[in-house]
Image 1 (tube, rainbow, N blue to C red):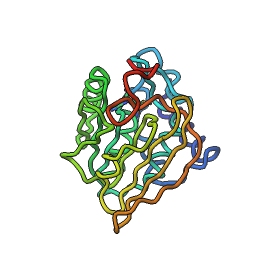
Image 2 (cartoon, rainbow, N blue to C red):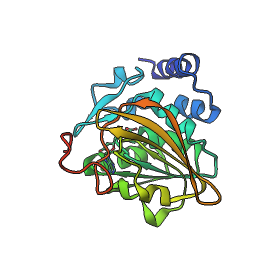
Image 3 (cartoon, rainbow, N blue to C red):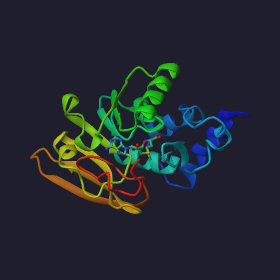
Length: 220
Ligand code: SAM
């Protein structure tokens, strides 16, 4: 299977049919081998515009949604970015092509270790992965120019807003457990927060101290 050609077709679909415009995002989508971030046996589905299971009840997100979230984070080459919900590592790999450094936090140890191994194997030297509760952010590495949360929260965790630098953007799905609104929260220079609604999305739950609790039906 010629993965490069299939990947190019996916990128063309994202641009032509889904309206992705950011040149940095388009370039990164054309570079990151998504087939290396899916579970063995799923490689042939890697370039379908759909989420896929990665075990532990979790998913690698749909390419369009990942592209949209990164586009809306408005990243610069000098940015320091936090991703909450490393999962397969795919979104962090994309971000690492655009931004200076990526901090990526995942609550499932197996997924975090697997993503770390993938980054080492594929030569990504600007991503740090940690096992932990990303609803509290990553205080030691803050402030961030952007934070992308790849799981749905009941409300915007306060720590994530606090860990944005001036002008920082937080992209986060917020709502009930089976459907959310994608929000962009921007910290202004005066330390106030502006909120925009980017549309409806469906994500697995953000589970943690400042998110859904262990009582959530999808808790694993
Ligand atoms: N960005 C990932 C990718 O590219 O594969 C997909 C993320 S998946 C939709 C959501 C991830 O968020 C899951 O791996 C889940 O374990 C993780 N997660 C949920 N709650 C979390 C929390 N409080 N802290 C860190 N990770 C969390």
